[in-house]
Length: 300
Image (cartoon, rainbow, N blue to C red):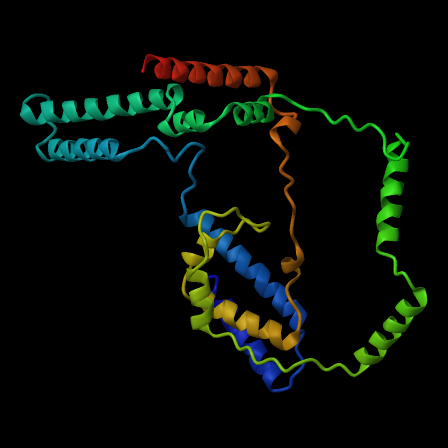
């Protein structure tokens, strides 16, 4: 419903360009990009349920799944029988529900108090220096000891020194030679025509690329993921095909393609969020696990 007008608009613009008519291509490309993003987000908000935090339970296994299926089956049978309050059907429903709920509670508790075999194997394989190196990297915060740069402690002076250093590093050794090369570049640029574009996007190519996108990745600035493209209507491949051909013809890309952001990932010892209490608890847990493992090895 929201994508059909975009297809017709793109087809009209492409036909006008091929016929030599004047079209404001930049506004058309930007409008198509904004409309596609808005349509995908609107459709996702209306038809895709949102999951809460901790929705995916990592401790869920086949046994819990089987118990859930038995509970659902016994409950449906109980409803079909008229919801009796006693008898074998009622007793089976109660037993299945109780087993399923008890298993879920046990798995939730064990996920918080037990260690996996992978952690035990990691502890076994670590030698002394490597283990304590990992320990210090996790729990001991190390502050930077650098308080001055080239004899200066003022941040403004240090920034200027860094700027001057990198500016001199990228300065040409011969200004005369650099000016000559720049003049040659300007003279050659006047007659540069570029190679003819032989790439022509088609719907099959776009559809294959969308199908091969990796799922489970973070969303972009427009809050779109690969799942939005994969699970959208097939008409989206037609729209993207026409849009890419229009970009090649005009040589203009949407403004949204130039937006990006960088997320710096700091190390644990540089994090200001982690409290001292949390560090102490994690240190105690690691010590308990290590001692328990050593006791087991000695007992053997």
